[in-house]
Length: 263
Image (cartoon, rainbow, N blue to C red; front, top):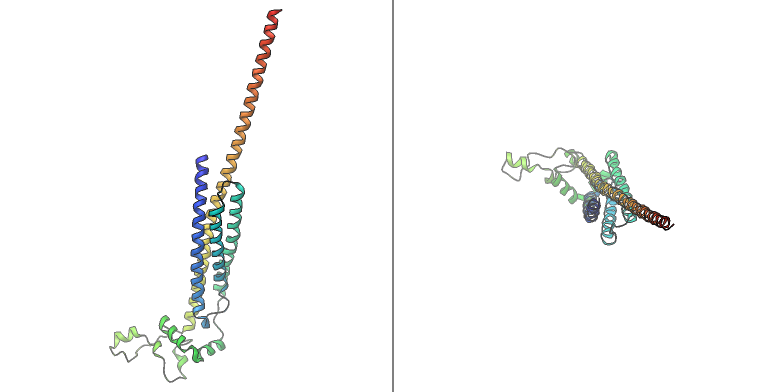
């Protein structure tokens, strides 16, 4: 029992280190997902940033809990373990809430209003943005190349250069244009990021569940160890009392026998 109790205690101490590292990793990934969503905010819905911000803040709290537990909790008392479990439970509840929030946004995410898309597409300040998006994600216009019908020509960023080079060595001629629109691509990208946010929250929650289970086993073993010590102490006390009473009885018998002999 003592060896198992010691192993569980050292496992909890190592768990605090893993917890702090996981908080840093979760914050980094949440910040990266937030950057991805904000990178093309003109084509990203406004109600998708909350889950990433929540996980970013919770990751920092998780790192703080791991650091404080490593420095101040030795897990030699039952109250320390209970405090550690309560902290993990509170953070875990908020993390799964953020994950469910991301999953709900993933299902509710809809296309941007046509008026907003038209403003973003026509604005001259966004021309470089469209060039970058069309080249990077291999798309053209909002809903397709037909969005450039009112303009003089389709920009070169809409050209599928891989097919053009295969069919014609002349780099100045575009023989194929991307058929899909960028709006659908950006919405799919936002949904994919929200799904990764949910998976991140789920992974962080699973780690905390493992630590809570380990802490519960430690508390159970710690309680059983204390009860066993109390039982052993009580047994020794009763045994000593029985021995003491037996000695007294034997002394009384000896005195009685000696008195009988003298008489």
